[in-house]
Length: 236
Ligand SMILES: [Zn+2]
Image 1: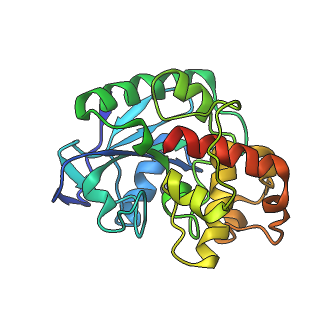
Image 2 (image 1 turned 30 degrees about the vertical axis):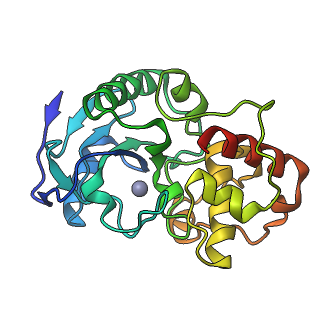
């Protein structure tokens, strides 16, 4: 593993209890440069060939989450987390390379073990910042990762007996503190668990500025509610 430590870090104020996964539309070395230019950081960058660059020591607080919310916590998610950028030119809208995913799996397994991270706290950037962020993208292989002990998936046969979308999203951990954020969280939920409802946007720079769709009719679909109830059961 290569090390290219960035100066944009400080001391953690709380122990590590989350793993935040991102995507970046650069190759690994450019991703590090881009973080540096923007005075940001994370802990690791995983390139398309599976190469890993360590950008911050794990005991440091890296700057990758920004304003974010998960499972009732809305302050300083950077202090609480390890952040990984996964390189993807489509920003996670096309399948990730096998070597890259294998490498990411081994990296995540080590982190989860070192800090005993609860599977409910393995999240994507879009999960914790649904109004602002589309990454790691709807093609990110969450289900496969869950089979490797990284994050949670759901069982179609086990559903919460609750039909209120806001309550179900909140049960999983999403921000539901306003009606606007509920809709954004519903779309972030699709990015993670129901990619068929997420629209592909070829212009990545447009996507970065336009995270939400113009049409939220997916929220009226039976399948959306069914999967939401099953995921909420897994996270309850
Ligand atoms: Zn991100």
